[in-house]
Length: 448
Ligand code: SF4
Image 1: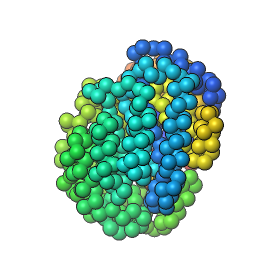
Image 2 (image 1 turned 90 degrees about the horizontal axis):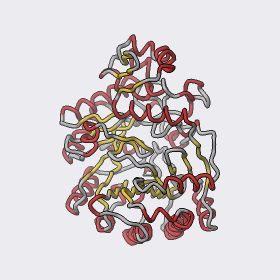
Image 3 (image 1 turned 180 degrees about the vertical axis):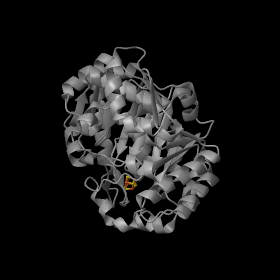
């Protein structure tokens, strides 16, 4: 990627884990509308569904963090939150009893730090959720995001015994100076131990989350991080660009601008990492994700069955994603429904037998069409345009076309290999809300 292309196109863009993206939601459903919509879909005997459970607690604050989390020094509150999650799920079981008739395909624990909870509490939570449901042990994926600093063999074993088979480790960077600047000290040995333990227990897929663009990062340092990651050979690696959004995440003001790599160095960090991963056999799946050739993501990419949702790329496509917990987002083909973000407010609402609605969106027919197109573009790097889209999209992408990053041939829009790093920007050409630029692009981090 040339320096001038990077300068030109490294602009704020959404990650497109949903469409419309959250800042552009405007047509809120009521909780009753959401439940009715859900019940309508549950009548379909072929419906595929998944559960996401958000555990927002962390033991300390990483200074780059942009997640919805709460720092807790004690575990006094753990059981209250677990009770609230169970209560929320009971509300769904009462309002939408047909959930029981559909086999649960996937259960994902995200955060925050799900391993903030003890093995005993994790077991209690999963047993309570799974008890009324049907799962097929041969067709079930349980996955968890772990902070290796707070992960024990017992926690991994308890989850494995309940069908969990995938684990995602927060790693970010292996260099001590970077770890100091981001307030996340985590030795290689700690990451190694959790990786080896998970494999010994029987987990079949290990993912590492890495970040480029962190304060203190340099080329030598990122090479060290990638080399050390390669020693442990995770099945998947998510290599995220530091999403710099200090207006949203004030903790990012704890490091100085001068600690951050320049835009040019950040580009080199990305390119060097990508080169090292692909030359070591990893396949570039798309926005931020790499996987070994044998991994399900790579197979899905080859088979054109790759999907993308709030958790990033997946090899499964679900009709319904039900989100439990503070800030969780549920999704159906027609709606998004987000829970209250504040833990106390969320708990108080679900403990009084009500869904804890905060935000959402009802998709128009136009939204649904564009959602499908953006999904295609993010998973296949090409899409069929409608006749009416050709002129405006060609105009929006005119400089990308001149720079050979995109080709529009009749109705077919294809992203070229040099254009792949600009996937986020190119998706924006289909995004009607970005075209209108409301709300301002300050809501999004830069694309690379
Ligand atoms: S562990 Fe994850 S969620 Fe918690 S503060 Fe660090 S980055 Fe944020």
